[in-house]
Length: 618
Image (cartoon, rainbow, N blue to C red):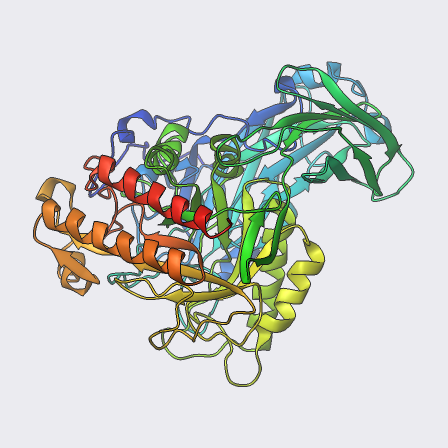
């Protein structure tokens, strides 16, 4: 076990962010205490959050990992957070190697849970979960190296039963993080993060940026669930055991919103169970009905949920359309980047995160495009419950310097994409996977990787559509003919502008991005970095006042409505939900305090899109 340093770390304090939000002061020192895994949840007495005050210090280089330091480390830090943010208490930039440490005790009450009271095969196991660490993490418990993980957006779990001190004794957790962001020669999936922020590229996030937690499970436990539920009432569920042996008896029960059991089924783990629910209430944006699920495997009982819906594509009156439950539903929403002025990648609170989604619903939108970022599971649960279709991007690699991913970098990108799909394919709200955005990180000359990747994603998840290339460099893969154009849309039209491609009538006509209307807010709502302010004129279209902003938005909605009525437009994404640093083209400012849009006008314009789409199905 590591020895404890006698020196006291510098105490934590919230460092004033460059721009705060209405929730900044609510963060406190024990953030994000909600159970982080809504689709695989055991009892409240079987988990413990490790979020809160840890200690932190930079590492010298990659070799530092071979000599773990003694704890506590040099200064206190808030977990989860991005170390570049004021919320972290560190607010440091350009740190590639870093250490995090904390101490914890395994609750003695866990011995009293079913299957407890012993060690080894007869006792319960202790799992250590990290929901996201950017970018590589090496983990020690009581001086023992217990695991390594690569990838800044997917969760990982370590069984630390044999490494912890039971009986309420103190345990030491140490994490080494390596995050090169976009530094050469690395080319990793990191979305919009850069160490040189400029206009559409933003402050990066390094470190432990999602929840860390402990969980007590029986020796034979459920490691994961894959759930699908279609409009016809057919349910499939794969119950993955920790051992992966298809022999353990399992039982599944589905409950409606009133708690009534509507179906139950028995089978064995690690095989696909199939059964039906007669006449289920379907999940739609207008009526997001959900059913609770209880799964039992021996002493292990987990709760989950699902929604009955079917996503497909078909020709409707001669036009290829996206279908939800067999009907063409026009999809309209915003490009949602998930950046915050106080927490960067980390929303200050759950209510803050949901605020953005509720804003979209209040304006009548039925979709959100999660733009080259992956959110905590609670984000997708919120979309499930609010009734927001999710178009989910894979975080891109950076190729702004012209570098092309090599074989190893491409393989790692594809591996992380598969992790994204595998970990999120049970959320009903997600309807589309996006592989590449505007060619970022996309190999375009030697071969077209999106063709093979599309086939692989469809094999992993045949229940959703695939947008292989949103915007540019379209080689015919996937379900969408996706155009990006600012400010005016070109959605399923007989006209286009480079670098987008002509509309392909064999696929769904979709406006992956348009709008982007800018308006410089009052200084108190502006990201106060001069370099960012200097890029405001680069915004697609800048308006002097809100009257002009809303006049122009109405004109763009009118054009889009015409394209729905006259051509083959099946959905569109407005840029964007919020301002982000030097981009001032959000519905709301970066601090979430000032709404630009005329809500009454926007609701009417959005409803007119749905009405025009409905006319095309008559």
